[in-house]
Length: 261
Ligand code: MG
Ligand code: MG
Image (tube, rainbow, N blue to C red; front, side, top):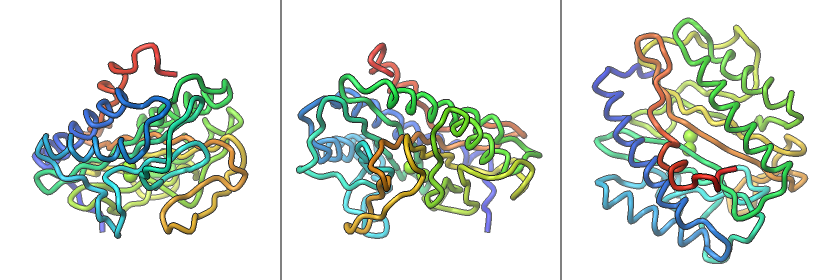
């Protein structure tokens, strides 16, 4: 079942997503060689609670962290750990969820740790750009497949591959709602988009094979060939026919400045 949101509900989603955006910016200040993903997790939880939110991922299906931290070949759902120490040349996807006023914010950004290999930088740029190209399709009258195919075509044209097993989703009072939003598909296919839908669009794009492996910890996914994987996510409402991006990378980009890839 798809829950259409009123304008008031969309504003509550925007409020939750604003905390997500500012949390990601707090973490952007910390990300450097020597930092553990558990330190990032602790700071995220503290910042979210200080801002009147609840970490949306903590305890979700038993997930032990407040954020997902997925390093290098990890695709998504990496568990924060004191044993994962960031090092020069790594990339790290931080996926953050915040529950406030009964609504979930959800957004993710992939950061560089120091100097990163040029082909990996290109992967990050392409994945982020594909997210915005997908968002352009999130308008009334288009279909889910228009979002999916646009992301897929853009990333594959650049020589990268699209993860199939993990997809975007509706978002609202529940972290994951219908419909699914795959990052691959065919134009003109799938559910018709209409105002009031709220979608988390989140391309997960690999440098090498699209194949992934589920790790034994029950959460982490990684690329089969251990090549790097990138992940960017925005929560988007379709409002008065148009895409209205509820999350934001503005705060992250202010922190990173020229350090952004
Ligand atoms: Mg997310
Ligand atoms: Mg999501």
